[in-house]
Length: 295
Image (tube, rainbow, N blue to C red):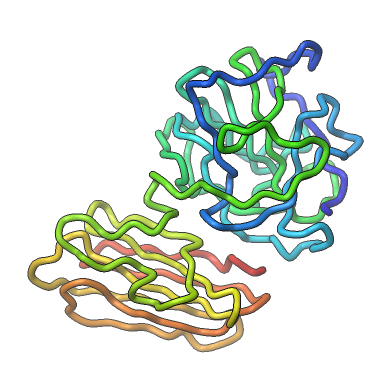
């Protein structure tokens, strides 16, 4: 499991952990990771003063293997903080306020994908797993909290069920809404899904929208260790100039480029335990990832 994670105090959002309450039934939180991924959560760190904070890793003994993996919003809401903090132990941190006033917090991020004031959907990518901290030496992990509107840390729930403190292994059901997870086809007449294009055994682990024109999708096949990238159009009529690419760290980038009706790709490459850079474009709108998904 990750090194002990220090719980920092943020202005106006900290109160005593005594008399912790449960979150409103109006919001159903999901695991803050892409659909189908399995993660191990632990609240055992001595720095977890409220007792309800959770450190997440891909396994119980993975060290820095999770560095760069995708973190998504546990529920829809508004980003009320996205910054690197030097006055506490959180490093890169994102906080999202939800419709019932509760706040989810995601700390030690390697990168942040959303800015303060942005509205996010459940399942939308908000950053990547990291180990950033101005005060502490940490192994890569996600520090996650659920707080009341008054700032009190309360027991986390996922898919309507309270986390089984102090430890639990969970599979993400965060398969909806933000255009970053799930197995939905493109809209507007494109009949294909990313998994149909990449083939049996591939599961979607990340994606990025292309300003209403479509999206670029990254998939992974756990049995073969292969990644796959495909760019999907929303519009199923006519054609558009499109690209899809996949670059395994240390190897030459593979690209599919042309005028296509439905999709560019698939680009497949073995990348087990190796970081990848991926992306694509439709017309002049493009997405380029950093090197990530290194597990």
